[in-house]
Length: 357
Image (tube, rainbow, N blue to C red; front, side, top):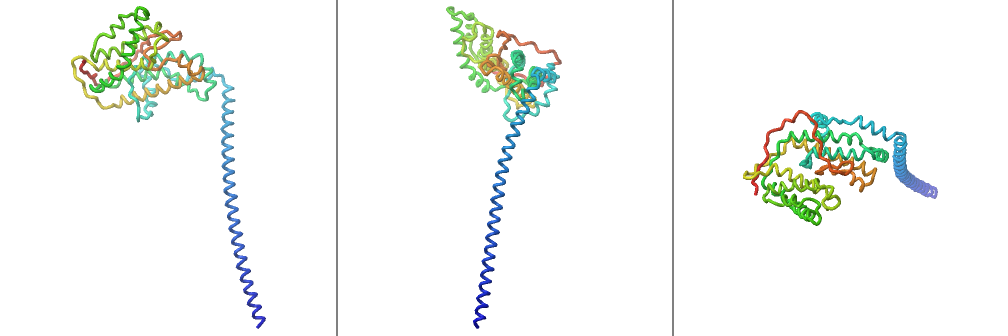
Protein backbone atom coordinates (compact mmCIF):
# COMPACT_ATOMS: atom_id res chain seq x y z
CA UNK A 1 0.00 0.00 0.00
CA UNK A 2 2.91 2.33 0.78
CA UNK A 3 4.18 1.81 -2.74
CA UNK A 4 0.80 2.81 -4.20
CA UNK A 5 0.84 6.03 -2.23
CA UNK A 6 4.34 6.80 -3.40
CA UNK A 7 3.33 6.06 -6.97
CA UNK A 8 0.34 8.39 -6.76
CA UNK A 9 2.42 11.11 -5.14
CA UNK A 10 5.04 10.76 -7.89
CA UNK A 11 2.37 10.97 -10.58
CA UNK A 12 0.93 14.04 -8.89
CA UNK A 13 4.36 15.68 -8.69
CA UNK A 14 5.03 14.83 -12.35
CA UNK A 15 1.68 16.33 -13.34
CA UNK A 16 2.40 19.46 -11.29
CA UNK A 17 5.87 19.67 -12.78
CA UNK A 18 4.46 19.29 -16.27
CA UNK A 19 1.87 21.99 -15.54
CA UNK A 20 4.52 24.32 -14.12
CA UNK A 21 6.74 23.62 -17.13
CA UNK A 22 3.87 24.46 -19.47
CA UNK A 23 3.23 27.69 -17.57
CA UNK A 24 6.92 28.56 -17.70
CA UNK A 25 7.03 27.77 -21.40
CA UNK A 26 3.93 29.91 -22.03
CA UNK A 27 5.33 32.74 -19.93
CA UNK A 28 8.62 32.46 -21.76
CA UNK A 29 6.84 32.52 -25.09
CA UNK A 30 4.86 35.62 -24.06
CA UNK A 31 8.02 37.30 -22.85
CA UNK A 32 9.75 36.45 -26.12
CA UNK A 33 6.78 37.87 -28.08
CA UNK A 34 6.83 41.05 -26.00
CA UNK A 35 10.57 41.38 -26.45
CA UNK A 36 10.23 40.79 -30.20
CA UNK A 37 7.41 43.38 -30.41
CA UNK A 38 9.45 45.90 -28.41
CA UNK A 39 12.50 45.24 -30.57
CA UNK A 40 10.37 45.68 -33.70
CA UNK A 41 8.92 48.94 -32.37
CA UNK A 42 12.35 50.24 -31.38
CA UNK A 43 13.67 49.19 -34.77
CA UNK A 44 10.83 51.00 -36.54
CA UNK A 45 11.47 54.15 -34.53
CA UNK A 46 15.17 53.95 -35.19
CA UNK A 47 14.49 53.31 -38.87
CA UNK A 48 12.15 56.27 -39.03
CA UNK A 49 14.73 58.49 -37.31
CA UNK A 50 17.38 57.24 -39.67
CA UNK A 51 15.05 57.85 -42.62
CA UNK A 52 14.34 61.42 -41.48
CA UNK A 53 18.05 62.05 -40.98
CA UNK A 54 18.82 60.57 -44.38
CA UNK A 55 16.08 62.66 -45.99
CA UNK A 56 17.38 65.84 -44.40
CA UNK A 57 20.91 64.96 -45.35
CA UNK A 58 19.75 64.22 -48.90
CA UNK A 59 17.94 67.54 -49.17
CA UNK A 60 20.93 69.37 -47.75
CA UNK A 61 23.24 67.67 -50.20
CA UNK A 62 20.83 68.44 -53.05
CA UNK A 63 20.88 72.12 -52.05
CA UNK A 64 24.66 72.04 -51.98
CA UNK A 65 24.72 70.35 -55.38
CA UNK A 66 22.37 72.96 -56.82
CA UNK A 67 24.49 75.69 -55.34
CA UNK A 68 27.63 74.13 -56.84
CA UNK A 69 25.85 73.82 -60.17
CA UNK A 70 24.68 77.42 -60.07
CA UNK A 71 28.10 78.66 -59.04
CA UNK A 72 29.47 77.02 -62.14
CA UNK A 73 26.96 78.81 -64.42
CA UNK A 74 27.35 82.38 -65.56
CA UNK A 75 24.18 84.38 -64.64
CA UNK A 76 24.53 86.23 -67.93
CA UNK A 77 24.31 82.90 -69.77
CA UNK A 78 21.12 81.94 -67.88
CA UNK A 79 19.60 85.34 -68.65
CA UNK A 80 20.49 85.06 -72.33
CA UNK A 81 19.08 81.53 -72.51
CA UNK A 82 15.79 82.59 -70.87
CA UNK A 83 15.51 85.60 -73.15
CA UNK A 84 16.02 83.39 -76.21
CA UNK A 85 13.35 80.91 -75.02
CA UNK A 86 10.76 83.58 -74.17
CA UNK A 87 7.81 84.29 -76.46
CA UNK A 88 8.15 88.02 -77.18
CA UNK A 89 5.92 88.56 -80.20
CA UNK A 90 3.69 91.50 -79.20
CA UNK A 91 1.28 91.24 -82.13
CA UNK A 92 -1.96 90.93 -80.13
CA UNK A 93 -3.62 88.16 -82.13
CA UNK A 94 -0.50 85.95 -82.22
CA UNK A 95 0.21 86.59 -78.54
CA UNK A 96 -3.39 85.66 -77.68
CA UNK A 97 -3.14 82.41 -79.66
CA UNK A 98 0.14 81.52 -77.92
CA UNK A 99 -0.97 82.20 -74.33
CA UNK A 100 -4.58 81.04 -74.58
CA UNK A 101 -3.91 77.34 -73.74
CA UNK A 102 -1.94 78.38 -70.66
CA UNK A 103 -4.68 80.82 -69.57
CA UNK A 104 -7.41 78.18 -69.94
CA UNK A 105 -5.71 76.16 -67.18
CA UNK A 106 -6.09 79.01 -64.67
CA UNK A 107 -8.90 78.15 -62.17
CA UNK A 108 -12.00 80.28 -62.71
CA UNK A 109 -13.21 80.06 -59.10
CA UNK A 110 -12.83 83.39 -57.32
CA UNK A 111 -11.29 85.01 -60.39
CA UNK A 112 -11.33 88.85 -60.11
CA UNK A 113 -13.04 90.75 -62.91
CA UNK A 114 -10.43 92.68 -64.89
CA UNK A 115 -11.18 96.42 -65.19
CA UNK A 116 -7.72 97.79 -66.00
CA UNK A 117 -6.18 99.29 -69.13
CA UNK A 118 -3.84 96.80 -70.87
CA UNK A 119 -1.84 99.40 -72.81
CA UNK A 120 -0.95 101.24 -69.60
CA UNK A 121 0.02 97.91 -68.05
CA UNK A 122 2.22 97.18 -71.06
CA UNK A 123 4.01 100.52 -70.65
CA UNK A 124 4.56 99.80 -66.94
CA UNK A 125 5.80 96.26 -67.62
CA UNK A 126 8.30 97.57 -70.17
CA UNK A 127 9.49 100.28 -67.79
CA UNK A 128 9.89 97.71 -65.01
CA UNK A 129 11.87 95.35 -67.25
CA UNK A 130 14.17 98.19 -68.29
CA UNK A 131 14.67 99.20 -64.65
CA UNK A 132 15.44 95.67 -63.42
CA UNK A 133 17.79 94.79 -66.30
CA UNK A 134 21.07 95.94 -64.60
CA UNK A 135 20.14 94.05 -61.44
CA UNK A 136 19.14 90.72 -62.99
CA UNK A 137 22.52 88.98 -62.44
CA UNK A 138 22.32 89.63 -58.69
CA UNK A 139 18.76 88.30 -58.54
CA UNK A 140 19.59 85.22 -60.64
CA UNK A 141 22.56 84.39 -58.40
CA UNK A 142 20.35 84.51 -55.29
CA UNK A 143 17.28 82.61 -56.54
CA UNK A 144 17.01 78.89 -57.22
CA UNK A 145 14.23 79.40 -59.80
CA UNK A 146 14.23 82.98 -61.09
CA UNK A 147 11.56 82.24 -63.76
CA UNK A 148 13.17 84.67 -66.16
CA UNK A 149 11.41 83.33 -69.24
CA UNK A 150 7.97 84.12 -67.79
CA UNK A 151 9.09 87.62 -66.79
CA UNK A 152 10.55 88.37 -70.23
CA UNK A 153 7.20 87.36 -71.77
CA UNK A 154 5.26 90.02 -69.84
CA UNK A 155 4.84 92.62 -72.64
CA UNK A 156 3.61 89.96 -75.09
CA UNK A 157 1.28 88.53 -72.44
CA UNK A 158 -0.20 91.98 -71.80
CA UNK A 159 -0.89 92.35 -75.52
CA UNK A 160 -2.68 88.98 -75.40
CA UNK A 161 -4.75 90.49 -72.59
CA UNK A 162 -5.50 93.53 -74.74
CA UNK A 163 -6.69 91.30 -77.60
CA UNK A 164 -8.75 89.19 -75.20
CA UNK A 165 -10.37 92.28 -73.65
CA UNK A 166 -11.40 93.46 -77.13
CA UNK A 167 -13.29 90.19 -77.65
CA UNK A 168 -15.51 90.78 -74.62
CA UNK A 169 -18.88 92.46 -75.13
CA UNK A 170 -18.87 95.84 -73.41
CA UNK A 171 -20.11 95.20 -69.91
CA UNK A 172 -23.21 97.03 -68.81
CA UNK A 173 -23.85 98.23 -65.29
CA UNK A 174 -27.05 98.75 -63.40
CA UNK A 175 -27.86 102.09 -61.79
CA UNK A 176 -27.10 100.54 -58.40
CA UNK A 177 -23.64 99.37 -59.51
CA UNK A 178 -22.85 102.78 -60.95
CA UNK A 179 -23.86 104.44 -57.68
CA UNK A 180 -21.67 101.98 -55.77
CA UNK A 181 -18.64 102.80 -57.96
CA UNK A 182 -19.24 106.52 -57.57
CA UNK A 183 -19.47 106.10 -53.79
CA UNK A 184 -16.20 104.11 -53.75
CA UNK A 185 -14.28 106.86 -55.52
CA UNK A 186 -16.00 109.87 -53.93
CA UNK A 187 -13.82 110.14 -50.76
CA UNK A 188 -10.59 109.98 -52.79
CA UNK A 189 -11.97 112.52 -55.28
CA UNK A 190 -12.68 114.97 -52.47
CA UNK A 191 -9.34 114.42 -50.74
CA UNK A 192 -7.37 114.85 -53.95
CA UNK A 193 -9.31 117.92 -54.97
CA UNK A 194 -8.80 119.52 -51.55
CA UNK A 195 -5.08 118.78 -51.69
CA UNK A 196 -4.70 120.17 -55.23
CA UNK A 197 -6.59 123.32 -54.26
CA UNK A 198 -3.97 123.93 -51.56
CA UNK A 199 -1.09 122.98 -53.88
CA UNK A 200 -2.38 125.36 -56.56
CA UNK A 201 -2.72 128.31 -54.18
CA UNK A 202 -0.66 131.28 -55.47
CA UNK A 203 1.61 131.11 -52.42
CA UNK A 204 2.66 127.60 -53.49
CA UNK A 205 1.92 127.58 -57.20
CA UNK A 206 2.72 123.90 -57.78
CA UNK A 207 0.17 123.73 -60.60
CA UNK A 208 -2.27 126.17 -62.25
CA UNK A 209 -5.18 127.07 -60.02
CA UNK A 210 -7.65 127.28 -62.90
CA UNK A 211 -6.96 123.64 -63.85
CA UNK A 212 -8.02 122.49 -60.40
CA UNK A 213 -11.03 124.82 -60.41
CA UNK A 214 -12.16 123.30 -63.72
CA UNK A 215 -12.23 119.85 -62.10
CA UNK A 216 -14.12 121.14 -59.09
CA UNK A 217 -16.77 122.82 -61.27
CA UNK A 218 -19.87 120.94 -62.33
CA UNK A 219 -22.11 118.37 -60.73
CA UNK A 220 -23.87 115.14 -61.49
CA UNK A 221 -22.77 111.55 -61.99
CA UNK A 222 -21.10 112.08 -65.34
CA UNK A 223 -19.13 115.08 -64.05
CA UNK A 224 -17.91 113.08 -61.06
CA UNK A 225 -16.90 110.18 -63.32
CA UNK A 226 -14.89 112.61 -65.45
CA UNK A 227 -13.27 113.99 -62.29
CA UNK A 228 -12.15 110.44 -61.42
CA UNK A 229 -10.22 110.42 -64.72
CA UNK A 230 -9.01 114.03 -64.57
CA UNK A 231 -7.49 113.95 -61.08
CA UNK A 232 -4.93 111.15 -61.69
CA UNK A 233 -4.20 112.94 -64.97
CA UNK A 234 -3.26 116.11 -63.09
CA UNK A 235 -0.98 114.20 -60.71
CA UNK A 236 0.72 112.59 -63.73
CA UNK A 237 0.98 115.84 -65.70
CA UNK A 238 2.53 117.76 -62.80
CA UNK A 239 4.42 114.81 -61.32
CA UNK A 240 7.68 116.76 -61.28
CA UNK A 241 6.26 119.57 -59.12
CA UNK A 242 4.20 117.24 -56.91
CA UNK A 243 6.79 114.46 -56.45
CA UNK A 244 7.22 113.54 -52.77
CA UNK A 245 4.84 116.37 -51.81
CA UNK A 246 1.54 114.47 -51.75
CA UNK A 247 0.32 111.50 -49.67
CA UNK A 248 -1.66 109.58 -52.31
CA UNK A 249 -0.46 106.03 -53.11
CA UNK A 250 -0.17 105.01 -56.75
CA UNK A 251 -2.79 102.30 -56.29
CA UNK A 252 -5.38 104.87 -55.15
CA UNK A 253 -4.67 107.08 -58.14
CA UNK A 254 -5.03 103.99 -60.30
CA UNK A 255 -8.27 103.02 -58.55
CA UNK A 256 -9.80 106.42 -59.29
CA UNK A 257 -8.66 106.32 -62.92
CA UNK A 258 -10.02 102.78 -63.36
CA UNK A 259 -13.39 103.65 -61.83
CA UNK A 260 -13.61 106.81 -63.93
CA UNK A 261 -12.65 105.00 -67.13
CA UNK A 262 -15.43 102.46 -66.60
CA UNK A 263 -18.02 105.02 -65.53
CA UNK A 264 -17.59 107.50 -68.37
CA UNK A 265 -18.47 104.65 -70.77
CA UNK A 266 -21.63 103.89 -68.83
CA UNK A 267 -23.06 107.23 -67.74
CA UNK A 268 -24.81 109.33 -70.37
CA UNK A 269 -27.16 112.27 -69.79
CA UNK A 270 -30.83 111.56 -70.25
CA UNK A 271 -30.69 107.78 -70.78
CA UNK A 272 -31.76 104.89 -68.60
CA UNK A 273 -29.58 102.10 -67.24
CA UNK A 274 -29.45 98.76 -69.03
CA UNK A 275 -29.57 95.34 -67.41
CA UNK A 276 -26.39 93.49 -66.55
CA UNK A 277 -25.64 90.48 -68.83
CA UNK A 278 -24.33 87.15 -67.60
CA UNK A 279 -20.58 86.72 -67.41
CA UNK A 280 -19.39 85.37 -70.74
CA UNK A 281 -16.71 82.83 -71.65
CA UNK A 282 -14.78 85.65 -73.33
CA UNK A 283 -14.74 87.69 -70.14
CA UNK A 284 -13.60 84.70 -68.06
CA UNK A 285 -10.73 84.07 -70.49
CA UNK A 286 -9.78 87.76 -70.29
CA UNK A 287 -9.74 87.56 -66.49
CA UNK A 288 -7.60 84.40 -66.60
CA UNK A 289 -5.01 86.13 -68.78
CA UNK A 290 -5.10 89.13 -66.42
CA UNK A 291 -4.37 86.77 -63.51
CA UNK A 292 -1.32 85.43 -65.38
CA UNK A 293 -0.09 89.00 -65.97
CA UNK A 294 -0.46 89.85 -62.28
CA UNK A 295 1.35 86.66 -61.21
CA UNK A 296 4.30 87.30 -63.52
CA UNK A 297 4.58 90.93 -62.52
CA UNK A 298 4.64 89.81 -58.88
CA UNK A 299 7.64 87.63 -59.71
CA UNK A 300 9.36 90.52 -61.46
CA UNK A 301 8.93 92.42 -58.20
CA UNK A 302 10.46 89.45 -56.37
CA UNK A 303 13.53 89.67 -58.61
CA UNK A 304 13.89 93.37 -57.79
CA UNK A 305 13.36 92.79 -54.06
CA UNK A 306 15.96 90.00 -53.93
CA UNK A 307 18.50 92.12 -55.78
CA UNK A 308 17.86 95.49 -54.12
CA UNK A 309 15.69 95.09 -51.03
CA UNK A 310 11.99 95.91 -50.76
CA UNK A 311 12.22 99.67 -50.27
CA UNK A 312 14.50 100.26 -53.26
CA UNK A 313 12.49 97.82 -55.38
CA UNK A 314 9.27 99.68 -54.60
CA UNK A 315 10.94 102.94 -55.59
CA UNK A 316 12.34 101.48 -58.79
CA UNK A 317 9.34 99.67 -60.25
CA UNK A 318 6.04 101.29 -61.23
CA UNK A 319 2.79 99.73 -60.06
CA UNK A 320 1.48 97.42 -62.78
CA UNK A 321 -1.76 99.34 -63.20
CA UNK A 322 -0.49 102.82 -62.37
CA UNK A 323 -1.91 105.60 -64.52
CA UNK A 324 1.55 106.66 -65.68
CA UNK A 325 4.79 104.73 -66.21
CA UNK A 326 8.15 105.99 -65.00
CA UNK A 327 11.19 106.10 -67.23
CA UNK A 328 14.70 105.30 -66.10
CA UNK A 329 15.19 108.89 -65.02
CA UNK A 330 11.95 108.93 -63.05
CA UNK A 331 10.16 111.18 -65.55
CA UNK A 332 6.64 110.40 -66.62
CA UNK A 333 6.30 108.78 -70.00
CA UNK A 334 3.22 108.27 -72.13
CA UNK A 335 2.48 104.61 -72.95
CA UNK A 336 3.58 103.44 -76.38
CA UNK A 337 1.11 102.83 -79.14
CA UNK A 338 -0.05 99.25 -79.55
CA UNK A 339 1.57 97.30 -82.40
CA UNK A 340 -0.48 97.12 -85.54
CA UNK A 341 -2.46 93.96 -86.13
CA UNK A 342 -5.77 92.77 -87.45
CA UNK A 343 -8.51 94.08 -85.15
CA UNK A 344 -10.33 91.61 -82.94
CA UNK A 345 -13.86 90.74 -83.88
CA UNK A 346 -15.92 92.42 -81.18
CA UNK A 347 -18.99 90.56 -80.04
CA UNK A 348 -22.30 92.29 -79.89
CA UNK A 349 -23.01 94.48 -76.88
CA UNK A 350 -23.36 98.14 -76.21
CA UNK A 351 -22.36 100.14 -73.16
CA UNK A 352 -25.02 100.76 -70.58
CA UNK A 353 -26.22 104.30 -70.32
CA UNK A 354 -27.63 105.70 -67.15
CA UNK A 355 -29.11 109.04 -66.32
CA UNK A 356 -26.67 111.71 -65.23
CA UNK A 357 -27.87 113.48 -62.19
